[in-house]
Length: 351
Image: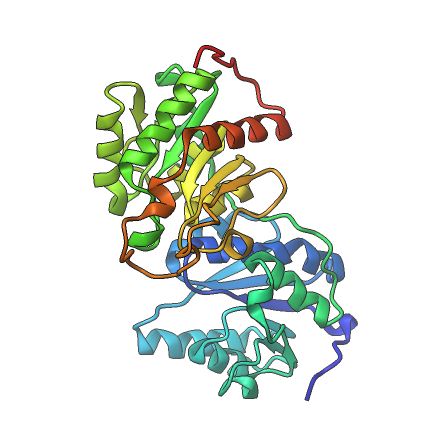
């Protein structure tokens, strides 16, 4: 049965979104829309632990539950806690077997999810059947729209705690870059084929240094340390290598950058939510589906390659989708970001 939702009956809402940080960031596009329809409702979230810090400080979010993937007793306790909270509406934007069970057992009158085989039983409201027709953020809005919920607001959200903001401000002051045109370079990527080669990142960094008189700050997480060190080494003293940071400190450093150049990754999506314009580098993934959301950002993809959008975890060829990116294209995209975001820099016309 497909329920028609009675908006006057909604006082408590649970949003479910598992997997990566970027996935959760894209789901936050629903928050302002839900607050428009249900201004007095409490909104809770269920996510995995890496995504929790970006939600806990948001004023629109009441509580964040943590899903522990391989802990059965934790899942049982979680279901009991969710049921005890007596939600009126559960929006399962992940809709895998585990979240379908959680949604079904929540006790909520209204339960929305995607109509996947074997999981329809859990829901009485459904998102679009054809998920790949929409950008991942837009898919959430379409899910609201198809169920007659407000869906016109398109802002993403990511919360940064005060300690991390203080850390970033102090670091920029110490590096004497607080009032500079700072381009963040972030080699993070969820799997090998999504990661632009360090040599190409160094070439891009050199381009923005020479053309835009930019300061380059290399940002990294634990899994990217080797790539970050190599980029820094290739730039031979012309870049700043950020220290090891927490995810919140990384977000704070991104918030201080003028532009972020990044792979399709969690930090890329965090940047769009924070408000730092992004130049995203796409190879195996489709920027029309997973690219930076919003009209303040740009992406590069070599669309004429036969293998583009392959979605393979490892490249069986030579990573041409990244290696063949030209410096001229980088300049065009950075200039576009500068213009559309009214950024201040001093061009070097001698390049």
